[in-house]
Image 1 (cartoon, rainbow, N blue to C red):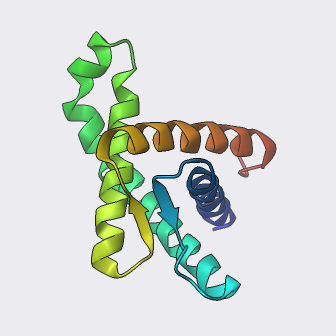
Image 2 (cartoon, helix red, strand yellow):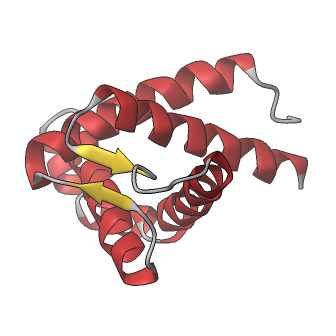
Length: 128
């Protein structure tokens, strides 16, 4: 249970940093209070984690030839698609998360989220 909470926190921080760094990604900007913004970040992080747990393996499986052909660089496109899917589902659920431009904001956002997650996973213990 602790490991899941750490992964959700890492996702939340990574999404928040991506929203701070990239002008085309908006996360909780319409919230008036800090608590509302934090709840939005938490819910989007949970949604992003669920998408990465269930949809990303399927997308990776079907895009494996492209990943092999590009020596792994197509994984960045798969990650960008997961970020776009999170944005779309967030709108459907009424959460304040938006990725404006499909390709560039998603790809750069996926890169930032990957880098921040890698650093945080090195620093934070996950129980293994």
